[in-house]
Length: 160
Image 1 (cartoon, rainbow, N blue to C red):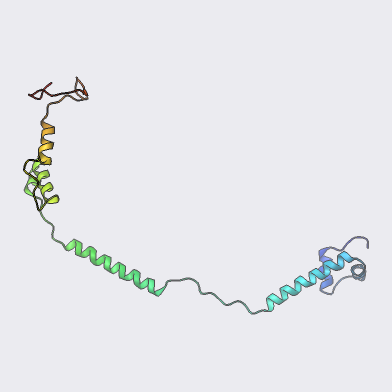
Image 2 (image 1 turned 180 degrees about the vertical axis):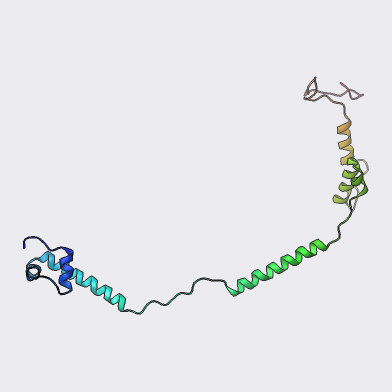
């Protein structure tokens, strides 16, 4: 034999079955002898791994009882808070809101939300006074025919 043996023939030799000419070739050919030893070593390593006991089983991740209890407690507290919130008495809207008077309604909301224990100085205008003055002013603006001017100075009567 002039050519090296195939992997199938080497496998058959490692299992004890091959022709006499193939066995003689392995004795004379250094390359085939090395491949046969490597095959025998690999088969031995596989046999060793398979003969060991199987590794210990790792339990599959599941629900942690402590986390499950914590989630249940949070759910109960949330439901109880929702029921308590729904059970709170609702106040009726103020008469100003019911009549549709916008300024009175804003005034009512403002006094309820921004109630102060100490009133501001009497000389300072209230926010309501500033807003009312802004709405009452008769000034030209960009949506009116004359447009806005930066140098606008109102006369004493408030009309330009």
